Image (cartoon, rainbow, N blue to C red; front, top):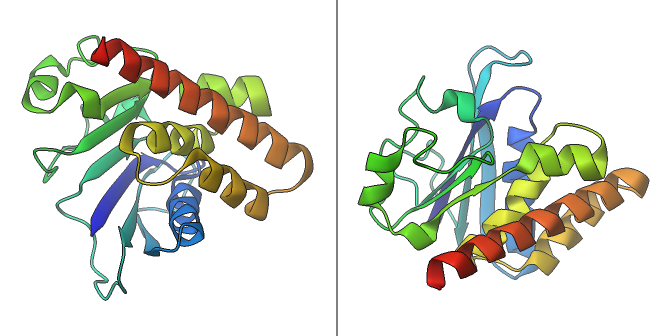
Amino acid sequence: MFQIRIHGRGGQGVVTAAEMLSIAAFLEGRFAQAFPSFGSERTGAPVVAYCRIDDKEIRLREPILEPDALIIQDPTLLHQVDLFSGLHRDGYVLINTSRSFAELGLADLAQRYQVRRLCTVPATELAVKHLGRPVPNMPLLGAFAAISGLFSLASVLKAIEQRFVGRLAQGNVAAATAAYETARRALETVDA
């Protein structure tokens, strides 16, 4: 089973991101579940959502304490909460920012994990460019498809098209595709 924990703030589409991850997994014939954990339900409040993906039925229902991957939609949470608690040694970390792990004050953390599984992508900037709104969730899903290989970009795009229509779908598809390409280029740099 692969377990993903998504951290962000209310209004950033954290819950929708988890739901869309599960849809992308379903589209590839896998089992998945997605569910949120709320503190105070208001815009800007910290929000956590979870997604599990497996090749067999999932019976667990508790929050994910030991994730295989972290998607951090709001980098202002990095030094406020222990987001990395329980992250597996070979885990993935994707952060919505144009800054490096060192620039974020996370150089020590980066030393403990495989560099190929750590990635930053300016998802909010891509969302604004392609969608006209600062909602980083769909770009981060595209980037996560690139770094994890857990599902294809095609499945992410199909999930987006099932959920959204018109310009909203087109903008999210463009933003997710741009983030996917950004993450792939970052991985090529690491592999070089």
